[in-house]
Image (cartoon, rainbow, N blue to C red; front, side, top):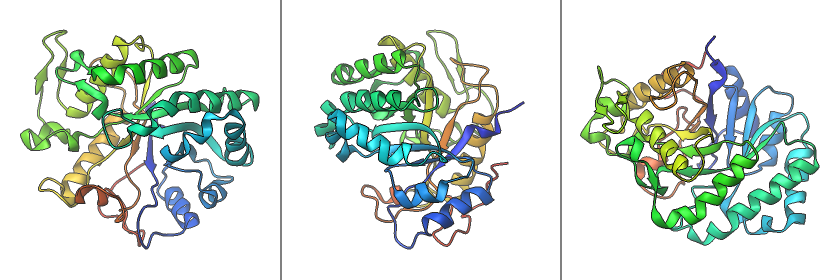
Length: 320
């Protein structure tokens, strides 16, 4: 039996003209999307999720991390945003997103682990530790080496930040969350490899003989190798974002987005796993439900939506 529940969709709201939170939740339900990621504890979204069977990954925004270094504040956060919603199916709390010692949000690095610990303490005190896992969302930018996959390693100056987090996840039997985007890894060099359409092996890892026919698996296995180097060989990875934009770059077309997301859903729902971690479905969250025209960064960042703000699909995509 294939795990049809292995695919969710990220729900960001950084755009104009988006539907109401209730309409967005209804759109998830009508399309058979059973998992959602949100990036902050938006009360209207939580209200709309009440009584649905949608499993939720809820985020602590980076700018709230410092406040949650206070245990009392973490207790209050969990009470207000988790315990007050007993009929919402919380699954993960993502404490911070893509915090990186090497980029523009490095000011948050020293707050992530303590915030995770305090949120975990609050979850434990509420008796929810078997239901909700506390983690943080990382990304491929933390890796200094990603090729070949078995050489995957975190940047030298990232290790002091990420190793204690890996230890925390090991202690609490929680997964690492990782945002994985073949789109941002030079797909021009081999587009079929990035879109899951290569006819056979593209990369053979000479260290272990493993063969890769798609870039998603290669990046994911590089993350696994990097974790293993720091004692996290048994920490599972949940892919907390992956997707393909429909505008903003030459390869950002509607057809490529349809191809990538269709093949991604098929791949992660199956039981092939990755070459390094075979025989399992890969819990994955597509980015994103809607285009977000207010997102900063490159133009392509604004065009990852699988639905337009008017709730019409940009291209056919089946979640069933």
